[in-house]
Amino acid sequence: MGCLVNAQMLEGIYQNAASMSGLQNWNDAIAQNIAQSSTPGYKKAILSFEGSDTGLVGFQDAFDRAVYRQAIGAGTKGAVDFSSGPIRITNDQFDFAIEGPGFFELRTPEGEFVYTRDGEFKSNDKGELVSKQGYHVMSDDRTVIQMIPDGGVLTGDIDGTIRQGGQKIAQIGLRDLDDYSRMVRSHGGFIVPDGGEIGAPHTNTILRHGSLEDSNVSATHEMINLINVSRAFQINQKVIQNQDELTERAIRHLGGHA
Image (cartoon, rainbow, N blue to C red):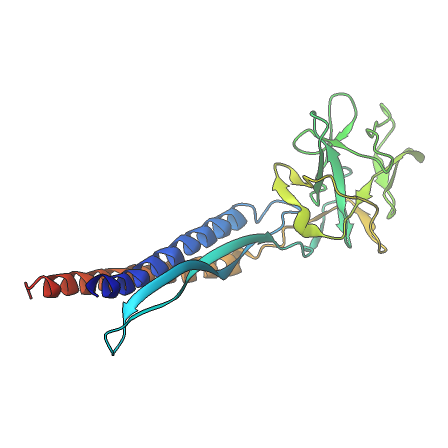
């Protein structure tokens, strides 16, 4: 029966080790949020903890019987908080902010579509509207937005229409989908790996020209989370150390070396 008792003791160590692994994942998510807290349109990474079945564990009960029960370990699941961030006025002709649901649609040099809330755009050497990564900003009909050489300052309407010198040159394409959980974070925004249905926003989404949507991360809140994670990690370390000492004493006792 000694091995059963020992298995019960080791279960506590395994569970605390799993908790520490989850806390490390949370720490990584917090570090990413803090690093990106000043990036326009960035959406906060969040983490949830959930139990996972790790099999049966045996132990000896008060009547000298071997009893088995289900062991539950700690697991984590990552997600993204797509809530809107505050809109900040910049008065820059290439800045745009989405008010309401939806995303800007970008196209990479490889032809992949990327979706972002970061409207900090610029003009490339060909006079095309691009993101800071150099990805083309798509119009509502999925064409490259070409500006007029020496056409004057860019102006924008709330429906996404952009003009130069009063002449319409394009309408910035806004896209949305019903299930954001299908979106995967990628460099420059999000992608939809299964190529799901991406359409126009269902509600009255408007575009604010000369503005940017800030990150929805609160750096202060994330720093508090970082402190809590550090404390929880230290507590789990202490528990594992205590359980390890108890296991060592039990082994010595069973071996007749108490």
